[in-house]
Image (cartoon, rainbow, N blue to C red; front, side):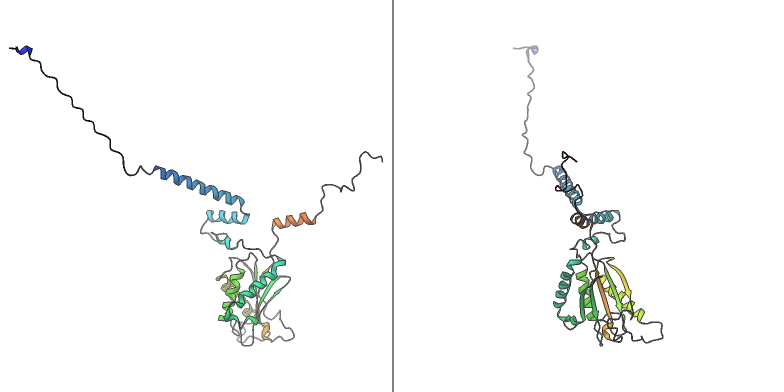
Length: 279
């Protein structure tokens, strides 16, 4: 028999458990989305800068004015200059095209067929003059009234839509005949002509004209009669809308100067003398 000293204590058994890693499923996080958004924002900013570098001075001023004061007053507020925009300029030689375009717009409105004969469009030294001629019954304004009639309002709205696309300034004039205005004398032809022109301005500005496009509003009473030989004629009562000629831009002025002025870099080859020739 073995003694107690001969008994060997068994060693403890070490058990190692290996747990396999499970494959990750689902999303990997949103860090890449942030980086992609930053990249797209940077590209958009780059394209805006490149576009502004190629834009004209008016667009740059409008953009700068918007960011300086988005809600502030002025014709450069927000994107209002776009309608100014930058529509097609109508120089002096192309006024006949604008005349034809306005005439075509009036023909397309059936309700104005009975008043189109009272609209006269002429090209003058001041610009394109659009005159709304009255009749004895009153076509565009009731006799002695400062506010336009339904036909007058509709016609003025069409003109505002067409002329608001132009960069040209407008003048609005009011005229009356020589018949004395009834009343106590506190209101006469001067006030009536001015009020009618101003009423036309308000209506046109609310239906398509650009801010500050109307440069002047004038009331002439009976001082510029259309038919001086018949001062009481109804045709003397009229509203005139004048589209002023567009001033030449700097680029066009430079191009005109280059074409008009001769080359002064030196004398012509035919006039140059041979330096070796004896005097």
